[in-house]
Length: 201
Image (cartoon, rainbow, N blue to C red; front, side):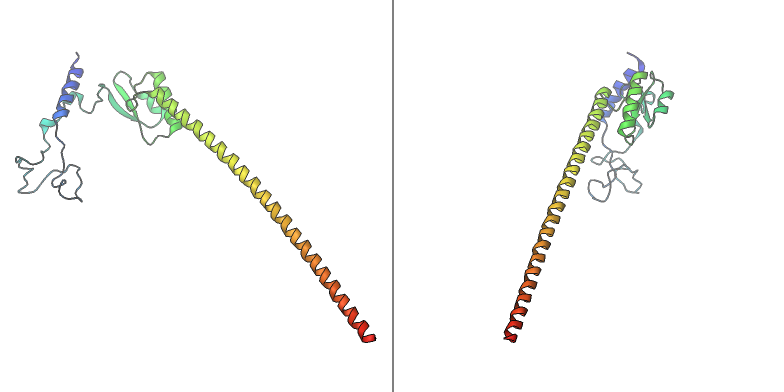
């Protein structure tokens, strides 16, 4: 067993026994966040390490210096944002963590290049599966867009049909009204003629 492996196992044991360090009165007061702050009060029980109070951060809880900030695999963690950064990485000592701000297209490219260069990706258990899920997502998106486009087309066609039906109805109405007006005029003319005939008699 190498020295780093032994130290990593030792660090694992330490981490199990390590307490959760919380800020003074964080468990009592809602507005006080649990993020650690050094207690500076003159009579602070935490600062004075009294029994029954939250533990104080001290050197004894730290992990060995040789394996400090290393991944559980023993590799140094490096955050990656683009493809160019992969060329500077040494696969024997370093492993990569793909930044959460990286989009799916770029992420897919980074994973593929890392697999070709045999660089370990620390924030994915199965990188190949991740590539497949990204592809599946893109496929789903394409299908969704197609479906949306067809629905939009159908809606537009229905709209056109409705407009045509509306136009036809308006034209029919106009024709009916014109006929009515012609009949009314004819009737008025008839009445006038009748009146004139009566007057002449």
